[in-house]
Image 1 (cartoon, one colour):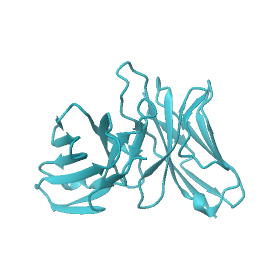
Image 2 (cartoon, helix red, strand yellow; image 1 turned 90 degrees about the vertical axis):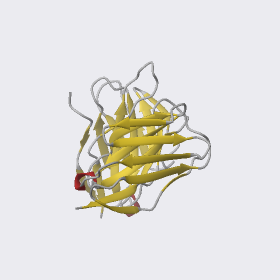
Image 3 (cartoon, each protein chain N blue to C red; image 1 turned 180 degrees about the vertical axis):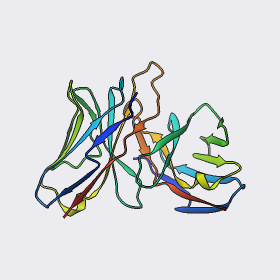
Image 4 (tube, rainbow over the protein chains, first blue to last red; image 1 turned 120 degrees about the vertical axis):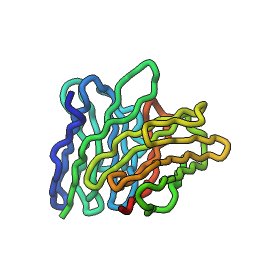
Length: 116
Length: 113
């Protein structure tokens, strides 16, 4: 069972371009979470999605950022008109649905976005 | 919103000693608390989960305690090894849905041979 996959691993964009980050959760997992991490800082929650639904986007900037988790295919975090301050590592995590209701999150290797 | 404080950004200890990392939270009491390990350039890896009705959890050389009165969790690594050197993150439930977590900034542990 492959782990959480993220691609690309490294992404370089110029200011004003769009960045698309993809995340394939572990097989059987239907919850996806996106985090942003700046150097020497902790993980900042951005958005929590289930298939075709955004459950909690309270950590995501209101402008330029959007996320989706379609019925088929990976989850996508999209950043429009990138600025230098968007440079960071973006991590995706997934977890399963269980009756117990509580599970650890399984993290991908991250996408390192650099905005020139 | 929840505020999490993890003791000192960096902790250095001698190999073989017990490392103790602290996680304090200030607002609501979480239903559970998790600890993760993160190595440079990699995603976090889950270590232990402890629920609010549990005082202590163990896994091999790891031990976690959870004191809801003090609003604190302690994470211990006994007989520490250089391979334990990493950043350790404390995470609490966000109370907004199953498994949704709020992470601390982490403590960077260095075990000196």
